[in-house]
Image (cartoon, rainbow, N blue to C red):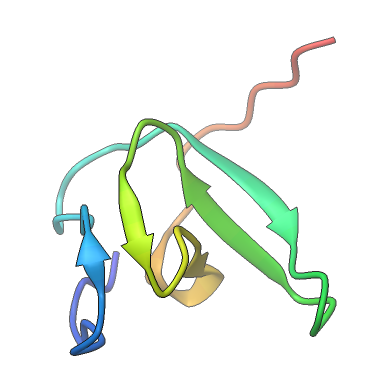
Length: 64
Protein backbone atom coordinates (compact mmCIF):
# COMPACT_ATOMS: atom_id res chain seq x y z
CA UNK A 1 0.00 0.00 0.00
CA UNK A 2 1.16 3.49 -0.79
CA UNK A 3 0.18 5.87 2.03
CA UNK A 4 2.47 8.67 0.89
CA UNK A 5 1.54 11.92 -0.80
CA UNK A 6 -1.45 12.71 1.40
CA UNK A 7 -3.22 15.73 -0.12
CA UNK A 8 -2.81 18.83 2.02
CA UNK A 9 -6.57 19.50 1.94
CA UNK A 10 -7.57 15.96 3.04
CA UNK A 11 -9.77 15.91 6.14
CA UNK A 12 -10.60 12.48 7.49
CA UNK A 13 -9.15 9.01 7.97
CA UNK A 14 -6.06 8.00 6.03
CA UNK A 15 -4.93 4.39 5.43
CA UNK A 16 -1.76 3.17 7.11
CA UNK A 17 0.86 1.03 5.41
CA UNK A 18 0.80 -2.61 6.47
CA UNK A 19 -2.88 -2.65 7.47
CA UNK A 20 -5.70 -4.66 5.89
CA UNK A 21 -8.93 -2.82 5.11
CA UNK A 22 -12.32 -3.88 3.77
CA UNK A 23 -12.85 -1.86 0.61
CA UNK A 24 -15.35 -1.36 -2.16
CA UNK A 25 -14.43 -0.44 -5.71
CA UNK A 26 -16.63 2.21 -7.31
CA UNK A 27 -16.40 3.99 -10.63
CA UNK A 28 -15.82 7.74 -10.52
CA UNK A 29 -18.83 9.38 -12.17
CA UNK A 30 -16.73 12.10 -13.78
CA UNK A 31 -13.65 10.20 -14.96
CA UNK A 32 -15.00 6.65 -15.26
CA UNK A 33 -11.92 5.31 -13.44
CA UNK A 34 -12.23 2.86 -10.53
CA UNK A 35 -11.66 4.22 -7.03
CA UNK A 36 -11.25 2.53 -3.66
CA UNK A 37 -13.62 3.35 -0.82
CA UNK A 38 -12.40 2.06 2.56
CA UNK A 39 -15.46 0.84 4.44
CA UNK A 40 -15.82 2.54 7.82
CA UNK A 41 -13.51 5.45 7.02
CA UNK A 42 -14.65 9.01 7.66
CA UNK A 43 -13.68 11.55 5.03
CA UNK A 44 -14.91 15.11 4.90
CA UNK A 45 -12.78 16.48 2.10
CA UNK A 46 -12.01 16.21 -0.74
CA UNK A 47 -13.96 12.93 -0.96
CA UNK A 48 -13.69 9.53 0.70
CA UNK A 49 -12.18 7.76 -2.29
CA UNK A 50 -8.60 6.71 -2.94
CA UNK A 51 -6.70 5.89 -6.11
CA UNK A 52 -6.39 2.17 -6.81
CA UNK A 53 -2.58 2.54 -6.99
CA UNK A 54 -2.53 3.04 -3.20
CA UNK A 55 -3.76 -0.51 -2.50
CA UNK A 56 -2.80 -4.08 -3.26
CA UNK A 57 -5.65 -6.65 -3.25
CA UNK A 58 -5.19 -9.56 -0.85
CA UNK A 59 -8.53 -11.33 -1.20
CA UNK A 60 -11.76 -10.88 -3.10
CA UNK A 61 -15.18 -11.68 -1.66
CA UNK A 62 -18.42 -11.48 -3.62
CA UNK A 63 -21.64 -11.01 -1.67
CA UNK A 64 -24.92 -11.65 -3.41
